[in-house]
Every structure is written in C-alpha cells, then in structure tokens.
Length: 131
Image 1 (cartoon, rainbow, N blue to C red):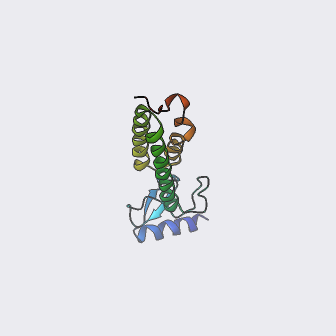
Image 2 (image 1 turned 90 degrees about the vertical axis):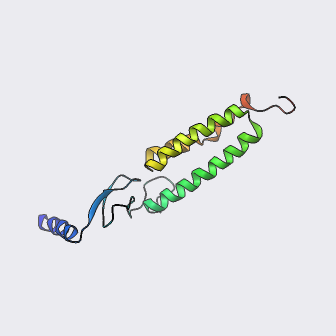
Image 3 (image 1 turned 135 degrees about the vertical axis):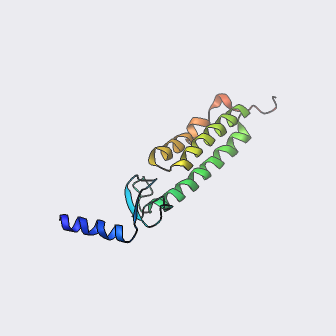
C-alpha cells in the first residue's frame, strides 16, 4: 500500500500537479493550475448533490440572485423603504462573503437572509394613500 501511495505522489510531482482546497466542499484536490477553485467531485450541498462543486456553486448563485430579485420587487412595491434598505444592506454583505468563498456556511447564511418570512411582516406594510 505504501508503494502505491508513493507512486501516486511521485506521478503528481513529476507532472507538475499542485494541491488546492476546494472552496465549496473544502476537500483537497490535485490540479495543474491553482486558478481552479473547485474540485470535480459531486457537491454535498442539499438539492445540488448531482452537480460538481463548480456547477453547484454556479446554480446556487443563480438561485440566490433569483430569490433576491423576488424579495426586492415585493419589498419595493409593498413595504416601507426602511425595510428595503435593511434588506439590501444585509444582502450586499452576505453576497460579498459568498463571493470571497462559496462554502456551505456562506451559502446557508445567504439562504437564511433570503427567507421570505423574515422580510414579509405586517407591521412594515406600506398603507395605500398615506405618506
């Protein structure tokens, strides 16, 4: 077993492979280019298990943008501007963290932020006809 392990490591070093840590799942992988941020393994994130880490991150970011647009549109049409401003500032912070690293924690934080029940409250509804 030790010979197999050293043979693999020798092959990787001869062919200029480098090791990097996947920014999505956190596992190490071998690559010829350190610009590769994601491994080719399947994601463990719920509802995205059939996709590779890169594909999962791409779809998750699209889903987050879609949810953001829905909430933003509803808040701007039906709620007070303070609620919209609070939502946008929190979303920008959360999105910056997600862009830095698309790990499970940052993705979870974005989805928690985009929970509609958190933003749609009766006390913040704009009353028609009043300024």
